[in-house]
Image (cartoon, rainbow, N blue to C red):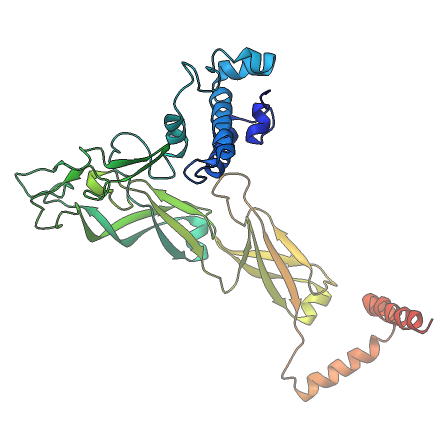
Amino acid sequence: MSKRDYYEVLGVSKGVDGKEIKKAYRRVAMKYHPDRNPDDASAEEKFKEASEAYQVLMDSDKRNAYDQFGHAGVDNSAGGGFGGGGGGNFSDIFGDVFGDIFGGGRGQRGPQRGSDLRYNLDINLEEAVKGTTTKIRIPSLVACKTCDGSGAKEGSKPVSCTTCGGVGQVRMQQGLFAVQQACPNCRGKGKMISDPCGTCYGEGRVEETKTLSVKVPPGVDTGDRIRLGGEGEAGPDGGPAGDLYVQMSVRSHSIFERDGKHLYCEVPISMTDAALGGELEVPTLEGRVKLKIPAETQTGKLFRLRGKGVSPVRGGSTGDLLCRVQVETPVNLTKRQKELLTELQGSLEGDKHSPRKKSWFDGVKNFFDEMKI
């Protein structure tokens, strides 16, 4: 009986990489494994077929030969599909592929790295734009100073686990199906502490609050992070510490609104300044500056002050400050002031003094005319 195409057996295309081949073999092997399909000769044959395909396609030389000559190019090297010499062992292949699912990995693991930590830091806009240095207090797990992180009492030391022989894992074989898991005696550490430290009680770590100095660079914004290497939690069994990530949150400002590297602010001006023009002082983060208001300025107009914004933390040109004019209607008028405004109102009759008013009413008229059609 002719053999099926190896790529078809695993359900992958010809150009896939080794990672996809391994994933496909996992899927097929789990489906047809003899332990899952007892007394099913067809499933056992498909499992052997998938294992043979996996062995060939994961070997670059065999795969090149197979791609060029098909089964004829690998029949000798593949050992006739595991029936002859050199074909490999089902259990070895299956164990290599599935070992990481069941806690696999061969040999003892080294000390694990500690967990990373995050601290949310609230700062005001001035601190974000100009930069600052601040101190923070972080509760964390640190290496026990009494036992130097070993967990063992002074004068003693951890010994190899007698159950796993110091490997940290035990392997159970059930027919062709091999399962590797953490040693239940030492919980995967490979070592046992017979005489634990009196300070950390054998954990090797204690909880402690530490004070750190954080330098905030100019230009940071909400969402930016500052990484402090090695300031996270200490690793178990003397492992290296993780990192601390300081997350920036910039508080809202009473005057300025930030949009990236630009700042915005609203500037109220009087009706007379808007009509006749004038000059007024506006605030910036560096102090006050003069802003010239031309005659006949309308509310909502933006004035740009170049270079008065934010210098981005990642470099680039400094942003601008954009001042949005808001024309204020006078309030708390005296009788005489009302009389003067009434006289002014009478002298302003006509469209030439309110160009937007005429265009707006023309638009409203056209809108209602179209609705009648």
